[in-house]
Length: 123
Image (tube, rainbow, N blue to C red; front, side, top):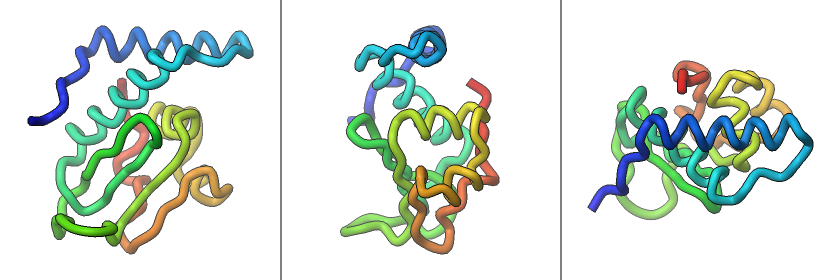
């Protein structure tokens, strides 16, 4: 059974709460952070459906995106992984994908693991 879709209002509310906490120099609530991450992963899946690249934001979620050869078993050949703060920054355009990858904040492996063509998202 596919995961329940996050409503746009709930997703934006969670994202606003995370941004407000960051602006105040506070740690965001875990539930808001988790919802914001999953909402942005959902938007990525809607924008670039497919199964070629697995985008992981542990411990909150992962999604397979981008058209091309579908991965079904074992370790995917194209993987992108980053922490929640980095994912929110690159997904919303606060940080450029290339900068996050170059700095090591986003780890990308595989020939198709470049998200510059699909980021930023417009939440």
